[in-house]
Image 1 (cartoon, rainbow, N blue to C red):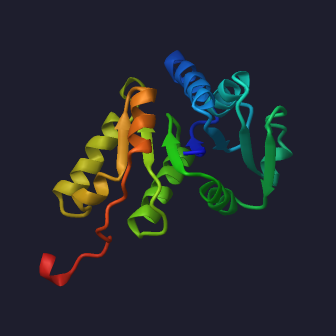
Image 2: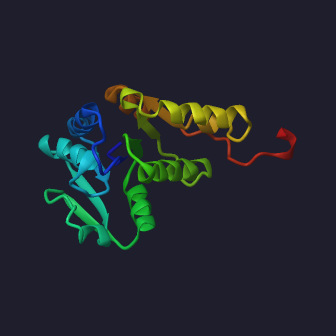
Length: 193
């Protein structure tokens, strides 16, 4: 993996561990010579992960809609800042630039980005690893819900397994490096019902 997209909050959240782990993820990526692709902001967990990469001399590519740049949240030290017109263009560009995705703690925007990437993978539009760094159990309730989707017959287990999860950075990056996308498609055959 040469470039990883990180989705995360533009806020820092209530736990200091979210920020410290975001910085550590950035530092670890830079040490592994993996460039960061992210939303381009200098605030919250987004700014923390970018700073972690930059402080270790790594490469950071920000993708920012022009309407957010006018709010003066663009990070000033990025290797490259790509401006786009819409949020959808932002997600598409971030997907085009990356070899895999990691979600850190975040809100609705982070979940939107994470699930869009999972949906695209489920539909066979890409074969990239998609991962959650589950800092202090932040995503535990979501993972229970994903299991409920499987239990209730609305998500195939093979598609559930596309979502890689760990609470440690090195283990998560190793899982991503070794990921092999499933060959089973999303569609359910009548014979499977």
